[in-house]
Amino acid sequence: MTLIININTDSINNLDLSSALSAIEKLPKNQEIAEYEQKLKFAINYQKEETDPRELSEIPEIRLWFLRLDAVYPWLPFLLDWKNGELALYTAMLVPHQFSRSEGIIFNPEALEIFVMQKIFVIGDWLKQKDITIKSRLQSMAKMLGYDIDDSFFDLIY
Image 1 (cartoon, rainbow, N blue to C red):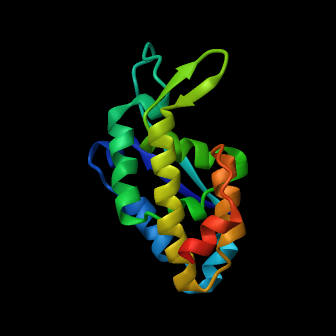
Image 2: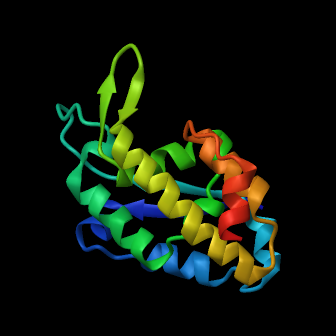
């Protein structure tokens, strides 16, 4: 039941979200959407010069497409296939970072912290509206990005 959103050069260059919109809008609007938790993948087919050494998350046009998508669906990380790197890819599209040959991707720490907390607030509120369990899901997402969120924090906000 994996959901794949295909993105190509034209859709990226034209900021066309139609492939994502059509896939996401077909999902249930109630708590049944939880069946799609961690089932979403992106298939990015972006044509670049053979000599272009940049990773996809270093290409401004692709990042802009993902910024637009995140503005429409700020709760989307709930659906991403975390175990297969989709959460890391999505985060790299939205958070400033650098690549290291030895350490891989290195996020700007302050930007990552802001991103994680913003997603906790947005996704938490969205989950609450859907009557879906909040705390464990958000703690797992934060942990995937290197953060431990204490139970007491959730007592403050939910």
